[in-house]
Amino acid sequence: MAQHQKLVVKVGTSTLTGGTPYLNRQRMLEVTQQLARLHQRGVNPILVTSGAKAAGAERLKFPDLGRSLPSKQMLSAVGQSRLMHHYSEMFDIFDIVVAQVLLTREDLSHRTRYLNARDTLTMLIEQRIIPIVNENDTVATNEIRVGDNDNLSAMVAATVDADMLVILTDQPGLYTADPRTSPDAQLIHEVQRIDETIAALAGGTGTRLGTGGMATKIEAAQIATRSGIPTVIASSTEPDVLARILKGERIGTRFVPATTPLESRKRWLLTDKPKGEIHIDAGAVRVLMNGKASLLPVGMTRVVGRFARGETVAIRTPDGEELGHGMSNYHHNDLRQICGVKSGRINDILGYTYGDYVIHRNNMVIMS
Image (cartoon, rainbow, N blue to C red; front, side):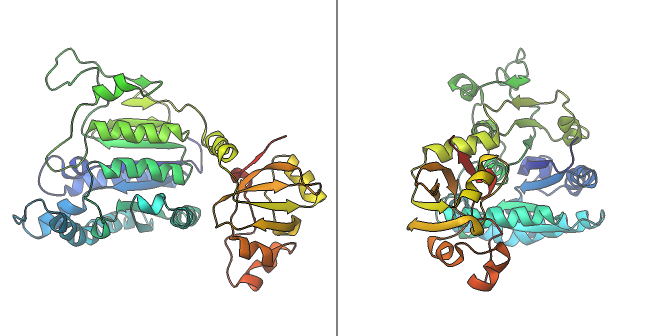
């Protein structure tokens, strides 16, 4: 079990309630204990949790409000603080600090919001704080979609370049048929590629309390594996399931990624049309050519075009040749102000900083 491994774990309402209408504190504590033990061994877990609406319904003694969007949002607003209170108290037992992070799909689709979410999650991880992520249901402008936290967990995993995504559910994994109706159904231990046949095996939605079923978990696995992240769907009732999965034990259904996260990002950078150009000096060219360094502002000589933070730019040599592509960590106006200066002066010049580098080596592809 490698230290500093980033593990995203998604738990659904059925896991947290044990199939009852109430949050099951014992189930929650079992999940907390597993995450705490991994944290103590150097793993960096991120928990994506459902359960806010269930917690709200429990607190209000299960009012009959119908299924309208405002009623769901109201239950989430009531329940989210209670859910976090329970998690915070349980992690306090292990002297672990947790942080609430509420996200929507839009937060991870809009470029600037995505970068801000990524930076916040990264900083929490670096400070050994466990992020607890949930969908921000109370401000959702669209209908709260089925299985959003399944897909949200995959998007979070891609955002932080997780080493693995584990989706805990009330089923042991993906079967060759519905095990509730087919006695001959067999658990599928490994899926090399998610195609129409695999998607068809997922069936319909899940429990009355939960919003997702196996189909949304397959969608999440597809998002994660396309980003280079191995994904496991497993039963939450399996003893010490998380540590055993990280050790490579054959539990649940494992979905094999087609690439690595770094290769996936660099393939995207190659195909994304640059919105501008950053020209660099000969010294920066030599440093970048070794493939192990980030681009610092001191190596820049000129900025061409208009682009936002997080957009793709072309990196050009003193002769004007295209050396590669990269994701800019700063807005074009910012880069013009810090062009050629040492990183230590960024905050003095701009009044803030997004870090020492203009383009991080993980967000850069060199073409030669």
